Image (cartoon, rainbow, N blue to C red; front, side, top):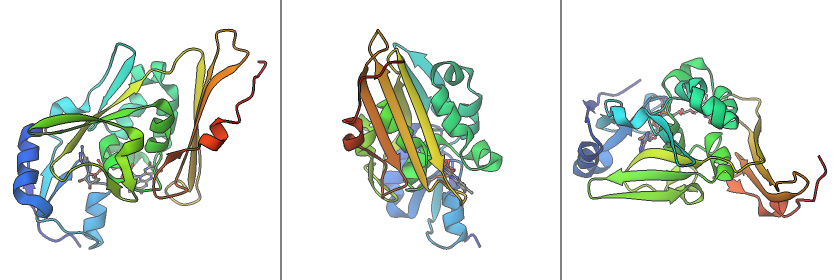
Length: 237
Ligand SMILES: Cc1cc2nc3c(=O)[nH]c(=O)nc-3n(C[C@H](O)[C@H](O)[C@H](O)COP(=O)(O)OP(=O)(O)OC[C@H]3O[C@@H](n4cnc5c(N)ncnc54)[C@H](O)[C@@H]3O)c2cc1C
């Protein structure tokens, strides 16, 4: 059962950061709530204050500029699946997102919440690794950019500071010609193993110039598999 808590509803990143700094460990960011409320209902964690960031409308935008796609941290999985921009420019991300959880979780669960919870059995981090994504974190006095490989520290642990907010994810559009794929296997609700690959060919399309491979769910954090990346061979298509 859920114990009583106070709900704070900031309307800006600065206000959120101030609340987190003021209330310390007794407060926690609340986005879609699909992980947090479950953990609170189970009695695994308790916070006196939940800081609902969904009123910060600027954090749910999906835009493109100068060869990058920027995804606001509050974008729900459903919004990502339905984005015509992503369908056209990053279909592998849409495919991965459309297979997350179920429609109820996709409706309210956010990309930011998925990454910040750092549950090892999750999909997006693995794909973002091969895409070379960078994450944006902010607090009142500063903004910083974090390569996705530095974001996950351990199971359920990220490099975010207690008063920092993940504001978005920037994904470079894959070079051409290249292909990106994500496959997962699972027999429970969440994935048991996920594998992401990005392969870039030379202009003749005869040789692989770069291969990136990442595996998720097989350890506390998703990771690139350099041993597999080095196995690339010239190919004839
Ligand atoms: C039944 C079920 C099945 C699932 N299946 C899958 C699956 O197949 N694949 C998969 O990848 N995931 C799966 N998930 C996980 C799902 O993707 C996440 O629950 C969801 O994306 C979390 O987002 P949220 O907005 O609800 O996070 P919340 O529950 O609101 O927050 C989660 C955590 O992140 C923190 N947080 C949230 N947003 C921010 C932010 N912007 N900055 C800093 N901290 C933040 C919160 O403080 C909290 O600690 C599943 C979940 C459920 C319940």
